[in-house]
Length: 172
Length: 271
Image (cartoon, rainbow over the protein chains, first blue to last red):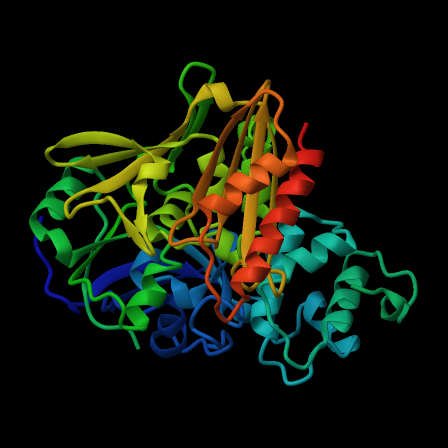
C-alpha cells in the first residue's frame, strides 16, 4: 500500500442531499469544515467542536452525527443530508414551516442541527411520544431556550398537537 | 483546527496489523472518533497516521450464541448495541448503560470498544461490562491474547495495550446471559454531561457482581458475591475498593454518598 504523507489530500466521492460530489481533501479536515468551506454549504453550523452542542448535526447514511467529529475522508461513499436538503424549489419544507409558525427559531443557530436530529427521530418514531422527542433532541443545545416551541412544532408535524400552548404546563 | 496526519482505511485485518506494526506509536486507531478527534484538536494526541478500522467487515459484527456468548466487534456503535435484539433480550444492564451515554448523535458514532480503550474512569460501558465479566481480545501482527476487562484498565486513560496492538472485539461469556441488571448514573445535564458517578449491578442465580464508575483512576469491579449477602456488606466492600477525588463535577464525599445510595437501590431493584 502506498504510504501517504501527512496532510496530503485524498480524493473522496459522496452524495450530499442527493447530489454526487467528488473532491480532494486533506485527511484532517472534518466533515463540517468540508461542507462549509469546500462545498459551500454553510447551513450547518460550528458550535462547540467537541460533540456536545449538536449545532453541526447532519445525517450520515440516515443517522444523525456530529459532523465536527467525523473526518471528511470517512464520508467517502456516504450519503449525507444537511439542512440545505430540506428546501424544495425554494420553498421551505413542512417541518421548517411549522418551526417558523411555532416561533421555534429565535437566533436560529441551533436550527439546522435541530432539524437533522428531528429527521433522525422521525425515521425511528413516526409518532414520537413527548419523552422520545426530548431524548431525540437532547444532543442539540438551544441557548434561546426555545425547546417548548420546538417540541410543539414536532407534535403538530406528526399530527399530535391537541391545543397550542398545551406543553407550557408540562414540567421536567 | 486539527493537526495534519495521513489517513488509511484498510479492508483487511492483515493490512491493519502491518500498519500498526510499522507505525507503532505514530499510529492511532480511529473507530467512532468521538474521543480521538477531540483529543487531536486539543493537542493531547499527535498521530502521524490515523487508521480507520470501520472498513474491515468483521469489526462491524455483533453476535450472540449460547456457546460463545456475546461478541461485540471494534466498530460496533453504542446505538447498534442498544438496538440489537439479542442484547435487549439477554443483557439488560448493557442496554441501560448505553441509553444514558452522551446524546443520540454521539451514540450513532461512538463505539463500545472505543469507550473502553479511551479508558476514562467514567467510561459508561465499563461498569456493565465489568459486571458481565467481559474479556478483551487483543490482536497484533505477532499474535493474539485476551484479558479480563478488569485487567485491561491500567490507570486514568491508560490501558494494557502496547504499540502495534488493537482491540478486535470483546466477548461476554454465556454464563452472564439473562442476568438481571441495573445501572444508575448521576449526571448534571441529561444528554450532555459525563457522569459524576455510576454503579452497575448484575445478578444471576446466587451470583451478584457490582461495579462503580468515576470513583477511582479506573472503573472498579467491587467484586462477585455469592448467595445471601447484605446490602451493608456490599457497600462496605465498595467503600474499600473505590478511591474518589474532588473535582469540578462533584466532591469525593458526594461520590461516596452516591455509591452507597445506588448500591442500596440496585440491591433492592435487581432480582
